[in-house]
Every structure is written in structure tokens, then in C-alpha cells.
Image (tube, rainbow, N blue to C red; front, side, top):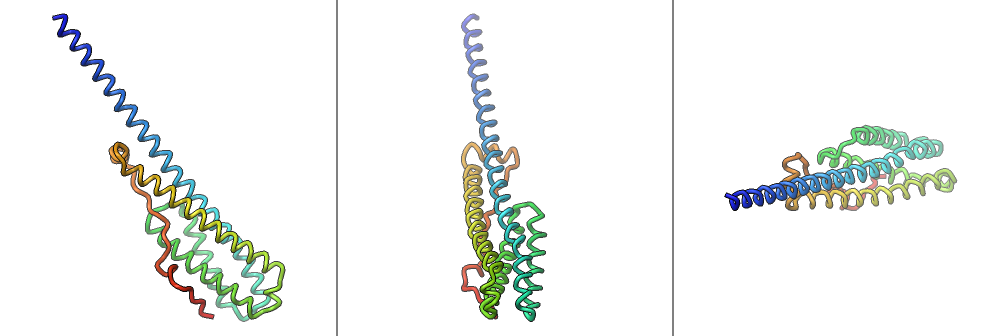
Length: 199
């Protein structure tokens, strides 16, 4: 009788320790998933912030070009329209795969428009030598570099999150708590081709 009670006590202790270990494992995996998911959100916020900076510079660039190049109104209107579309996309604040594709395509079209604006300066020596134009050009180029860096950081955060999401035991916790993989910010196929400016 005493032996049965001792064995039962050991089994209860072992079961309690096992349940504690499972609980600890669950909470540790859950908290790690939350931290990694938040890191992807923070990285995406940096991408959006940098894109917003570029969009904020565009009205000044359009205004500067407009002052020198009166007959480039079609191009100026197109860039202004693309800027409005990009602002609308940035305001949506989500990272679903379709939105990332739309935003990447829009950024590619906007970059082409900016490239054409910069090329217009070649036809207007006064514009090309304008201090305001040169400063805007430098700021936009610097912002483009920052966008590339923040995109890389976002993709690294997504890779870290997605990899953890697929590892054992985190994938069990992820399934229970409904954590889903995140989409990468990928370049459009057209971004790998030579950019034609159609001037």
C-alpha cells in the first residue's frame, strides 16, 4: 500500500513537471513568435516611412521642373497621379502579398517617372544647374538608397519570422495561435530589365 502511494506520488510529480515544461515551452514559443512578428511590422513601418519621405519630396521636384519646363505637363501630371496612388497604398498599413505586389509595381512606375523627370533636366541647362533641383535630386537619390536598405531589413525580419514559424515546436504553437507566414517585398519582373525612359 505504501509502495503504491509512493509510485503514485512520483507519477503526479513527474506529470506536474511535464505539464510545467509544456506550459513553459508554449509560452516561450508564443512570446518569441510575437516578438518576431512585431519585428516584421516595425521593419515594414521603416519601409513605409522611407517611401513616404520620397513621396513628400516629389511635389517640390514637380514644382521645380514645372517652373523651367512648361511643356512637360503630361509627365508632371503622370508623376503627380502616381504619387497620389502610392500615398493611398502606404496608408493601408498591411503586408498582405497582393498589396506588396501592387506597391512594388507602383514604386517601379513612380521610379520610371522620376527618372524621366531627371532626364528632362538635361534639356534645360538652367534647371540642371538650379540649386533647388540639385538638392532635390540628391535627396531623392539618398531616399532611394534608404528604401533599398529598409526593404532588405524588412525581408530579413520576414525571413527570421518565417523560419522560426516553421521550426519545431514553434510551428505547433503557431498553428494553435493562428500565426501565418509573412510575404516578402519582391521586385517586379520588370525591375530586372533595363529601364526605358520613353523620352
